[in-house]
Length: 271
Image 1 (cartoon, rainbow, N blue to C red):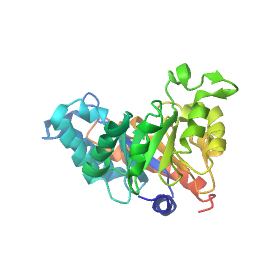
Image 2 (tube, one colour):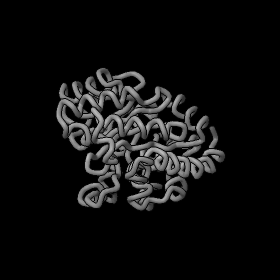
Image 3 (cartoon, rainbow, N blue to C red):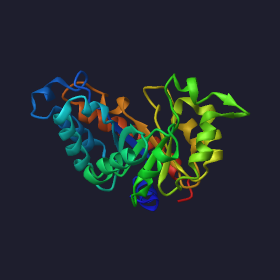
């Protein structure tokens, strides 16, 4: 999916919602455990109920990988089921040198047909560049994450700059706003403006809105650009809105609630 196609979907759906698919067998509704593929069945029903309001889906590969070959099969089925007008982000957080990264890229871009993959930048350019060799595919680079431990390294100051700012300045030379996005956590709203100043034209994938306490209006205030430039991810608040047989219905309600709030902002963007 190209940047222009992504922006067109945001305008059409009046939404910049990304739904995170984190199927935990300890949390999904118990009746699904009786199906032949509980992971896929859960994701399938979430996708069916939320796709009118979502422009992206982010399957977290860890929730599938832990089940071995069967889990990989569920992941492949889930990715294949996501509507083609939605951006598919493989949340795999890969990052290794040389041909290893190249084979990771082949796995998710060629075999699984994902549109994007999350990548850790801390091994440097040769761990990221192989992912950028694929046409109309995206690298979603970890920049400023929403977890508590982010302060251990990302926010460390040296020579007047935080480490995340150095990562942004350097990595912006590797890719372009057409093939690179950045993960920017919603729980660090005070720093979102710092990120936007350094990479004014790139899309941000923003976790942390909802269950983690991030505020959508604040994210838009400090992180949006003229063409929106945001994919706001919500996982638990949507997919685990109910643990009963009505889980898909409740997920739809939560997705619609977020889309309605987003629509108010989309109307003000220059798109």
